[in-house]
Length: 157
Image (cartoon, rainbow, N blue to C red; front, side):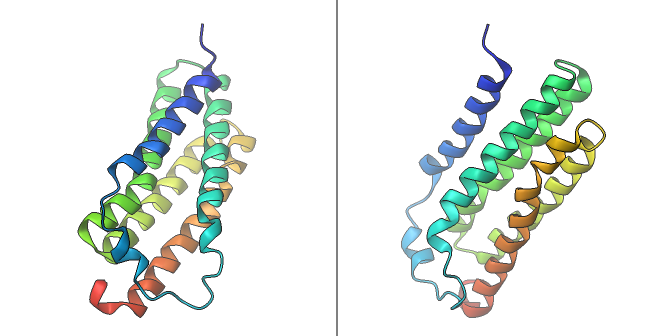
């Protein structure tokens, strides 16, 4: 039998990697946007999101192990899945529509989803909730950065 952590890890990995295959060819558009001077950590963003996804998968594993297979646990797993899909859709949708506003809306939707998930997870496990903190801390930074990009590139908003 396959362990639950392997399934959760595989699903997390497949969804995250899947976004690379649906990313449109409009990367040049995004690369040519003006950026704020303080955005010096941009090369670290893939590493930051990797850590966030690992923490999210660990959080999901803890929740699953508390009450495997129950209806509530399945619903919460659905929330984890939805949050990851929202998160990885940021780049493909923003590039497809060439719209920073689209990216900002997706980012804020993810933040709201992350808060809802954390509230649902809190009564089950404080550790699982703590593992969601990297997402909850980074998501507003990403939304703020996208808003700053909109301010610097009003024609691309």
